[in-house]
Image (cartoon, rainbow, N blue to C red; front, top):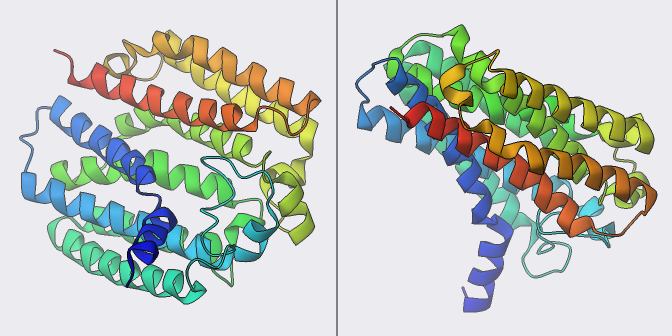
Length: 297
């Protein structure tokens, strides 16, 4: 394998996205520590391997199955439109296929190991693996069904932290939902924002994402409502006070993101990189502030 091919595979992988999975998983571990549980490192590492394997499996599968749409995309941003490696012919499509299957196998082994430690954690891992695989893969192809965005947000922003929590505590806790509910809303809003740069390519390829199904203006309204409700829940501390003690710091970015999408809807094709960067930044900042709130004395 040449250096050029290795670099193309790294770009196909887009490793920066793995940081999000690690952050959300750490949030769940922090919630367990906040409950007074002594953190077991071997379980923490096992859960992280499972989360990362499922994340990589989903990513490679999406690159493989979504190649036609990605090839039509002329408005790729840092976070949307795929890596561009496969449509550009830099690597064979089979590379993504085999990579997805390899990490699916790693994920299955990790799920079985987690099941041995905590049956509930194993079930969470199995549900996440299936949901992540069928996001892109037939017969479900959730990404075109209008349900892919919600299923992804639930896996990333709820099931991932919940896995970290359950592996340490061995039990479910409704308080995890109280921390994660705003994150699910903000993540779903982020995915809606991601679909605006891909709008023309998705429409041309017949990919019926949630934003395409809703229409531009209703999608803006839903995006605004999700961020507004999540921000209000966080600011009022109605869900979990330790996790929300610093979240007021995200309010300027939340307002900016709402205004950005409204502005983009009126000036199509302009400012797309900043729109997607703002969406990612809002989600990551909210998760980081929640983690800091839980970690503070």
